Length: 186
Image 1 (cartoon, rainbow, N blue to C red):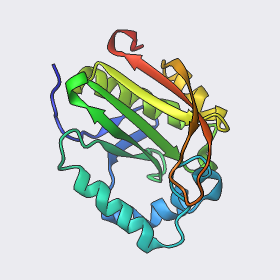
Image 2 (tube, one colour):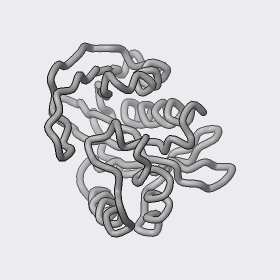
Image 3 (cartoon, rainbow, N blue to C red):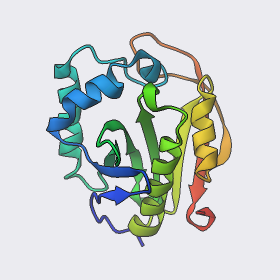
Image 4 (tube, rainbow, N blue to C red):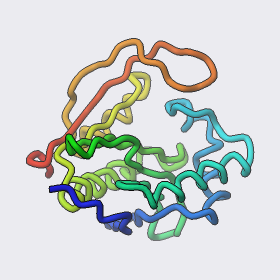
């Protein structure tokens, strides 16, 4: 049975997963939203200024009041630095299904932060909220994202050919989809 329990602060050994606030604009802009390496694999281009970033955060903050509106800022406990986010990007409550996406600034890649955050969010979504299945997908050109999904316990469902990503130029992309069902959770 699904329960929309609202955003909850989550913690891991090294991370705090929390609501993103309007005060996080500068950190988001400098730590990942303006990072060309990071945004190369996202559906949106690198932000050029704080105004752009604040507009996105404003939408995220509004989203917290919507049913199943989950979007966590990823903060390093030791430093208090906000380094990325992980969110439910789509959901189908009737099918008890959602899709998550994550983004971490390239400065913090290869430290296990994305896997650590994803495991905690999967646990929350499957065991607390009650989703039956959680999906994620990544661009084939970004195999590191696939490793994160595998390390978090997700299983490859398949390859989607010739997908469009919403940047300014149409692109034909290969996306790889993974999922985990409640009974497979670590």
